[in-house]
Length: 419
Image 1 (cartoon, rainbow, N blue to C red):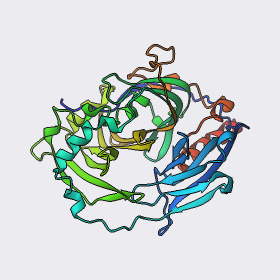
Image 2 (image 1 turned 90 degrees about the vertical axis):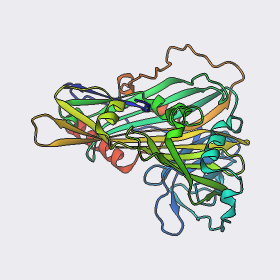
Image 3 (image 1 turned 45 degrees about the vertical axis):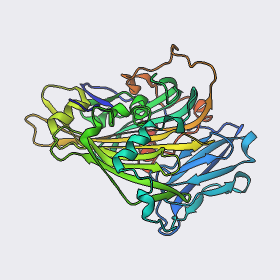
Image 4 (image 1 turned 180 degrees about the vertical axis):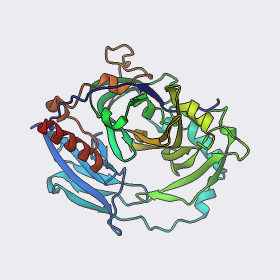
């Protein structure tokens, strides 16, 4: 098997009782909390994964699947502005002191005509452009960086949430020019698992935040575009786009037609000025059920056949002071579970996302040995202890949950009150 997977799935046979204490988070008095929704100015449709940052700082978040966000800003920085940006749209800047909570922020598409000659003005083929981009380590932060990140993973049986886990972590990000791997330190984790929705199977994601961190293609090209794999892909130019009037090359990639090995296909968005990767959206070809199943399934009962039907990935980068850095990624996997001898099957969707909410450059060497350092084989649900300690969570920026997650939590709260 040539291709590496970003995360692994473990199936266990088990029976468990749900016993969870849910407490609403409280805001810390030293922070100003603002919330809103980012929409398309023309269609009013929500803009998903839009960047929301605080000027002259590294504080940021992203919008959820409903286009909504919530941002906690230290009182010392309330004189700044929030900047909302989205690929193909003009940025919008709003002074925090003038911001009205729960506002709808409309972004206008960038309509500036692009000269077709821009696509080939680099004199590089699409493949050559990608190779140049993978070499552009100097376009990214090249110093030890300590990043604060919010991580969430969910498991759904068909459309119903069965497991929710969240964590605040510190990423000890090594320089992009270094071959040293990044470390992740667990600060706090909480979970909510309703095993009644999982039948007699408990699903666990192995890898946790590392799975999302490994989508950082520039730092970890070996998962897709290593020297061994890159010749297995075809590249071609797509229609260019813009980020706030800056030209962005779009490169499509897909496996060569004759290959049966599960490989990735998707789009790369490359800044025309720096040749840095600004974002990537890609999926794994899972037509070969046997081989793709081997990539993800680490452990399962003998009488169960499990194979992926969809595997999608996204990674976004953000620029600060002329240097790019990993900012956000999400992974969505759908699996079909067939019990031998049973007529019906089950479908599970496993999603994870991680967003950098703050960071600082550290001149000192990042610690490699700490009690709370996670391993790449970590199962987050085994580390989390339940939805509790609201004062702690009130101090950190998190990604606003989508409506279905909020509904699942409220439903279990009602059930607990009745019992």
